[in-house]
Length: 296
Image 1 (cartoon, rainbow, N blue to C red):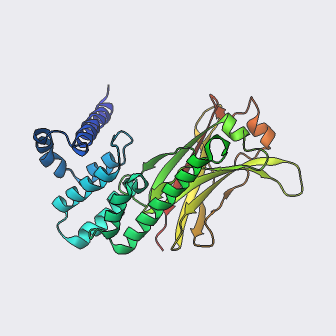
Image 2: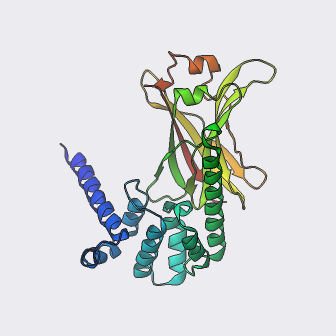
Image 3: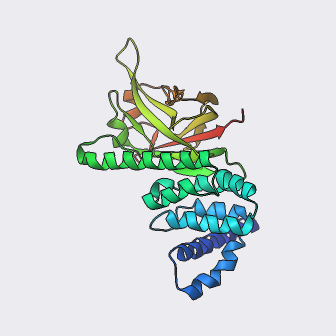
């Protein structure tokens, strides 16, 4: 193993230890264990806190405890209120799943002096919107064909306005879109803004042919948000991601569905979905979006 690989292993090992300790801290282990890790966790750098709170390996029942821990750490490291508000809004809150909080904790968030009131309103409103949507989908049961497949999101280090979102779809999910269906992914967040990927089976005007389309969308738009993004997909034989040209789109109250590519693979639907299609690897379609929020 070369030195570079050793460094990667050490970083991963260190992060897993932190994830375990923070998970235990949030689950309120015995006072002696909580006290044992308190000083170490409060001394973590901002980059460490971001990495752990964004991890899928942080196991907690509700996100309430994550929010409380984030505020405790913020008070210990950012005593100035304005600096604390700015840091939380731009670095910490994008990693917290507010829709997984209890209603009681969301009321606390709304009144919290550590959050700018306009941001608190946006965070709480969006959380209740997602909760209502999830409740509606659950009520639909097996008869509801609309669903949100999961995403894997990588927030680029040192840049909270840019991320990579990975969406994997099964061949059966794609086939079910024919002839004019669509599907939205789970939400992902950049600078407090909620985005999603949208896939569609699109019928060409004036013909009977169909194609596979991919789009970027945004939920709950209150202000104009300028985005720059490009899509990518993996195909045989090299199985590497092939990217589309960069696109630019401004989301506002009247434009939330976004802009995308109506025929991502430049091929008819029948060829895209065929058994020998090069776009499915072991039955999965691998898609990626690189999204950046531009400064106006």
